[in-house]
Length: 187
Image (cartoon, rainbow, N blue to C red):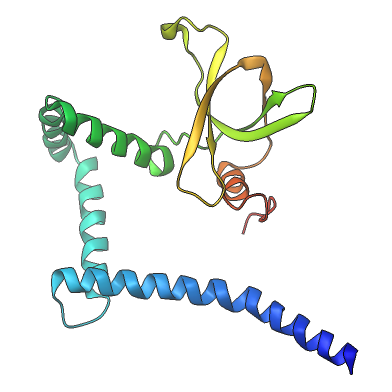
């Protein structure tokens, strides 16, 4: 009887490991659709999401077009003249480009020696290779995402304390953000 109860409990927890992330993901998607649809006041669920997805894709297409590219450059020049707006706009643009732009920044995972004596290491991403403008030759900037948070820290560290890792950037990011739980699996 005790063995049967143990199996049932194990099955329950195995089911929980499958169901909870699935339900949370579906819930998040459904709520995102509802929120978008309520903002656009549309009668059919999901239409707002499709409209926004289409609009973003069209903007992406037009920004690669030369004529629209000139307009984009002109717009950014105006934005860059407004001090506080420039800070917000350029920070968000740089962050988005780091993840989805042509010059992805989080594609070079590294292992950084934090404390040699205690063999303490941390996984991060090199975001700047050359700091000679700051009069810090031989130093690099490494960004360390935090586990289970949309936050992180960046440190300026000696180049010799940094060792490249032979794993894809997205896999390393997933490993860090999951607190190491995900391992280095691709999926």
